[in-house]
Image (cartoon, rainbow over all chains, first blue to last red; front, side, top):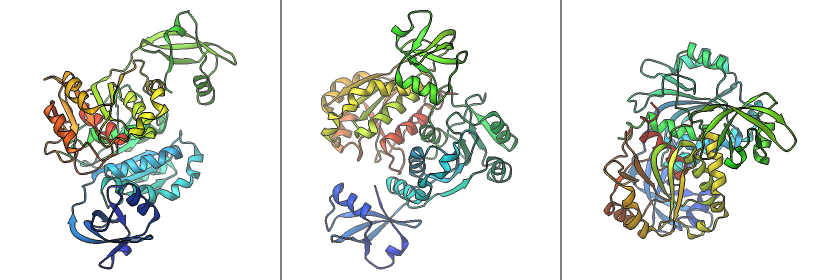
Length: 239
Length: 239
């Protein structure tokens, strides 16, 4: 946790109170905060501030904003990923948010086990987003959308996310073209399930404007390939 | 598991027997293998083959190599990482191996909790390496070295890993220079602990030939930053 993220309603008065058990526990055990210390605090979907701790009680840490700080820029990417195993979902969302993905779409696919859609984790996406933002020092939550039917999404929705300035790339081990790198424009990135998209799905994605591109001969897990490809694509954004 | 990795001693006869409970369980439950199926099999630190399953018993799956396959190239990088929390160590090793890191060094640092060095996971590194290789389809284990004293390593060992053709970069949020990308040469990459290397450590690394470079203003966890930076640095290697 590199900033404390508060709900706008917690920041309406002059003094802000941090009252979440999770946040208090972290601040006490990991940061051992004391009155007078400074603390980085963000307002969810709002600004970020350097604050000063004015009071600490058993149930709250009260802070006063002293200086506005800049919020890190997002990566201009829409990440479309086949719904992963529940244990992977949490990490995938947290990492994508931490790295600054603008929009995340969870998509069904032939090799996605239908039971994955039953996971209670889907009701906890907001928590993972908050953890990812607090890790990165960001305040702006990405959009997250869910599409449980592959074909209607690819035919009706995906084309609206593709343009000359925003091409779409699907990672596909058997593609001849390789994944681009150090791009200076936005893009839509599709990552398949374990085992990859099936040929029918790759064909449908191609028909609807996606370029299938390879990452070489190593087979990389979903949760590992996302940071790997984002680092490759957006290396210019952080120069 | 995208190949089955066998010990060279298991591949001395004409027919090879897969007998590890972990591998058998995976092949039966996830791949539902049958006699006659083909199976990708690698010899640890050796060659990789397409094989044919000739017999399946309760305790073994017997295969016969029918064709040699190429082993994916490694990334020309020595990854030096501050010893992470035990739960992170497993993923960090697996991901680094999957992505093709040539050499991994676990290093002590001021912000590394000394208790981390007591973890039993350190005795299981070989298992994580095997899992990473089986995921990637690779057969060649990276070197892994452990240095529990920061200063002697940085002053005596690190300089031997740095040359004009192999610069060393340490990720440091406050550096003015940014992390390079799409490099066409080898490098040594240093990743700090949670909270980063302390100023004294950064100074010592600089004095001994490391360039401190920034990744922008987002604060990224160790296990996420490694694939992110490897994708950024070695984007040319997979083109």
